[in-house]
Structures are given as C-alpha cells and as structure tokens.
Amino acid sequence: MSARRRWTVLIAAAILVALVGAGVRSTYVLGMLVFIGLYAMAALGLSLVMGFAGQVSLGQAAFFAIGAYVSGVLTASHGWNGWAALLAAVVAGAVAALLIGLPIFRLSGLLLAMASLGFGIIVYYVLVNWSGVTGGPSGLTGIPPLAVGRFRFDTDGRVVWLVWGLLLLLLGLGGNLVDSRIGRALRAVHGSETAAEAVGIDTARLKLAVFTLAGASTALAGSLYAHYLTFINPSPFGFTFSVELVVMVVLGGASSLWGGVLGAAAVVLLVEALRSLLPLLSLSRGAAEYEIVLFGLLLMAFMIFLPGGLAELRRRPA
Amino acid sequence: MKPAPLLEVQELTKEFGGITAVAGVDFTVSAGQIKALIGPNGAGKTTIFNLISGALEPTRGRVLFEGAPLPVHGAHAAAARGIARTFQLVRLFGEMTVLDNVLVGCHRRGRAGWASCALRTRAMREEERHLRARAWQVLELVGLERRAHVAASLLPYGEQRMVELGRALGMEPRLLLLDEPGAGLGPDEHRRLAALIKTIRDGGTTVLLVDHHMDFVMDLSDEVLVLSYGRKLAEGDPREVRANAEVIAAYLGEEAA
Picture (cartoon, each protein chain N blue to C red):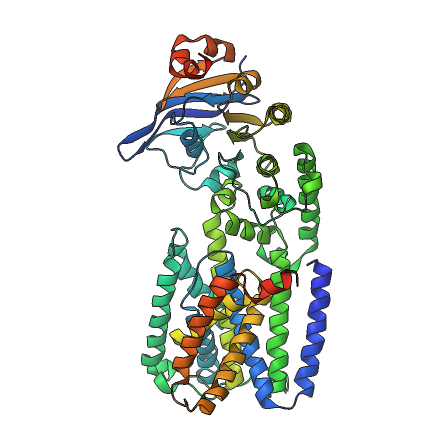
C-alpha cells in the first residue's frame, strides 16, 4: 500500500471511530470495541515478533500487566499525572522486553517461547504476592481515567476515541515502517537469515528491536486498560491471556499489521458468542475451559488450512 | 608493481570435529583482480568463503581486509566492511520482489532509522529515492529491469542467480565473493556472466570466485588458486597453473584426461 493510500484508509477509519464513539449508545458494544482496540494494540507488536523475528512469545500478557500496574501504581498510589504514568508504563514494557531479549536473540532456536513463558509466570506471581505495592490478589482501585484538561476519557464512547485513535496512529506508523528500509530488512530476515546477514543486516539486533517494540506496544495497551477500568487485579493477566494473544495473531495473520486487529476482533466476538451460547446448552460452568478447547481447535485449523491468517483471504482471488 | 593486497588470508584453518576442511591456507587477492579458487568437491572452497564472509569462525589463522583483521563472528560485520557474497545454492528473499531484493542489498547504503522510517521524514524519503535509483541501475546492469516487480521465487533459475548477484552489487562492495556463479547455466548464459563479471571488476569491485567450469574460470581469471583436501596445491597465472603437473594429476586430470 502506498503511503498516500495508507493515510486515506486511516483517516476514513478515524472518522468512523469518531462517529461510532459519539453515536453508539450501547455500552456493551462500546466496551467490546474498547477491548478489541486494546487487544489489537497488544497483538500488533506480537505479530511483528512472530511474523518477522520468527519467534513466539508465550508471556506477552506479562507486558500488558506491567503496563497496567506501572500506570496503576504510579497514579493511584503516588498521584502521578496519567500521561506521565502511561509514558513510564511504555518505557517499563520496552525495558523489560529488552532485558529478556538481550541474551535470547544472540542464540538461535525457540528460546523466546521458553523464556517468555517463564517470565509470564514470574510476573504473575510477583503481582499476586507483592501485596504492599500491587495490592495482591485483590489488586488496585481508584486509578484515574486519562484526561486532557477538563476533558476526561471516562465514558466508553470517549475511551473508544482514545484507544482507537492511538491504535490507528500506531497502524499508520507501523505501515510506514514496513514500507521502508527497516521494513525491507525485517522481511529479509523473515525470508532468509543467512542472506540477510550477508548483506550486512545485524539480524540479532533487528529481532531484539522488534521484541522491544512489541513490549512497548503491549504495555501501552495495558496502561490504557488500567485507566479505562480504573481498577486492576492479577487474574486477567495469566497464561490464558498470553495464549489468547497468540491466537489473535495466528487468526489474523502474522506479519500483517491489520491481521492483529482482525484477530483481536475475532477472538473477542468468539468469546462473547461462546459465553452467550453455553448457557443455552446447559453448560453454564467452566466457560474458560471451553474457551481453551475452542482456541486449541482454531489454532490447529488455521495452521493447517489458513497459515497466513484472515489477512490472507484478502490477497486471495475470490 | 603489484597493487597492495585487498584481502590477505593467513594460515587459515578450519576443523569440523576431527576433519580438517581447510588446512593452513595462505593467499592474497589484489585490488582490481578477478581471482578463482578451484579444486575438486570437498577441497574446502566454500568453507574458505564462509570463513572470509564471517559465516564460520576459523579454528586458526586470520583474514585481513584492507590491512585490518576481519571480526571472527557475525556475517553482517564482514558485509559492513564491504564484502558481498552469493551462495552456492541461491538464497533469495523469495516472497519479495526482485526490486526489493536489490534494495535489501542497498541496506547498508541507507541510514534511516526506526523513527525516521515510521515518520517518513523528508530525509528518509530523499534517501529512499537515492536507494531506488541505485537499485534500478543495478537491475539494468544484470538485465532484470523488466522483472523488477515480480516475486523473486517465481523467476527461472538463471534469473534468480542474477537477482542474487544484483543484491550483492546493491551493497557496492569492495570485494565480491561468487560461489559457483555459473552453476546450472547454459553456454550462452555463461558467456554473458563472464562479460558481466569483467564489467563489475572494471567498475572497481574485486572478485573472488569459486567455479567448476574450467574454460570459464581460465578465461575469466587473472589468477587461479588450486585447492585439494583443504591445502593449497598451486597458485598463479591460469596458463601456468594449467601446465602444473601436480594440478593435472590432482584435479584437471579427472576431467581433462
């Protein structure tokens, strides 16, 4: 997509978001849109990691949690300005990813999957047990919504504006990036690492940069999540969420920026459908277990029949 | 007077487990030369390429480039010093277009970082125009302008080899390592390749190549080095090397006799 066409699409999408945020009354629909936007933001970086660096992170929920808790603790417990806290959250996500990636990308193999899995578990237990700071299992409350002057992002419609506005901005910047010298280098690494090295691309460094960026974008989503809900606790940030993010990327299509958005929408809608369907089948208990089963089946089906994800459908002749 | 050596290989040795693939090989490549490494299969030719380009670490010995030792790890570091290479089995970025493959070759010619690429700054767009102009020149040189927007993996084999060569030329290298550039090409393509390699040399790029095709090598090279079982057997002018009895016995005999 050319730069001009990309911005046309984004501006059209921004107008749509503005209208939806102002016009739609149903908090149920708006809430779902917020979550799709947040998950898409978290999946955005992960899709670069999986699509270009060729590695999978099984602990991406930890970066979301870091974003949420850095923002939550700094604002609710220390009275920071919301935007300063958001910035700190993004930096914290990036630094955490950098520190994990530093030893990993010097080596080959699927070490990132193992290391990030461990990291996810560690972060989860820290959140639960470091009660003095994180509030333990019951979490933190009283996180203020973000505000510009007197304008507070405290209704679902306004948060749709904020989250989708930032998401579209990231998609625009990401699109520019993919369509540039850096983007070509990323695609080259995906194509053949040996050949990429031979033309002077430091593949280890590039992958580390992608992972760091993914940590930052996921932490940004986490921070926005905290300011949206105004309360957080550790339970949504477990292993299941990390798996959901991977499912979003696979469903949407790794190495496609919009794939993450499609995947996030698919996962949120599927979970909602499942929740409204299960009671009808008198299977009211254990929705989470059924989710995992469904996602497992979906992952297998996509890997076999549509490895390029939903984004690939667009490219195929009808 | 002989020009100063661009590349100086000193007692280069590579052992894989108990097997010595390259055993204390010394040679130099002068700037502006076309030099060929020849020898039977398993003589260590490709291993030497991998050692020079940084894809492998030597067990002993070292490689000096423009008088300074090359770093022993990370192929990208050798590339950054101005050493380009092609592979025995073509390695392209198959899903990318021919033009993009050459543009990746130009990677080191650009400086735009993450931020300026994401923001498409004026400087970045300016640089992009230069890189594209450069890439089109290269496509013209290797005769692939009409294939510019085709995915590299869709091209026939001979053209894929040219894409790989184009990608290496995009780097504007000081030294170009060609690993069996003529493999799988027909006689016509061979002739054109030889002419192209001479053009590249005349453009200021020194060439070190490995090939099996005797006439091709002898006709093209200023100097030939014969390897057998990881050791240097002979080195010098193509005609002298061809006359060397040891060489005939070890290598040329197999094919020429």
